[in-house]
Image: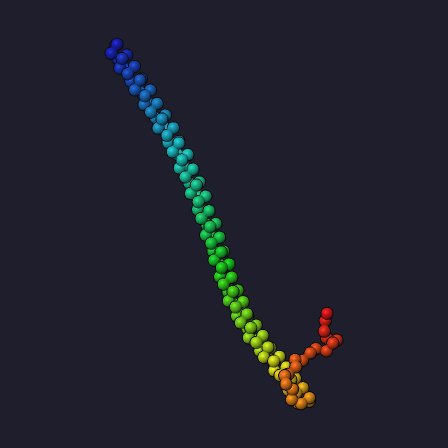
Length: 125
């Protein structure tokens, strides 16, 4: 009978140790579940942040392309304006030369052509 009691006590002690081990395992599993949930949340946040970055980079790319197109258009417009201003300059020189020729034929040969002056009423002070 003493042997039976001893074996029973030994069995109870082993059961208590096993129960404690199972509680430790359960605690570690719960902690592991929390860590996995935190990793999942972080992964979702990283995914969302990467999508936002991708969107921002796409937007910057679109803006860069628009700026490049605008720069090309501006350069073409500047070239056109330069060409038009040169043509206008040539036209003004041609008109001035025509006035010099009229003055020299009316007054006789002049030593040096005089530039055309605006009428006094056109002069703005």
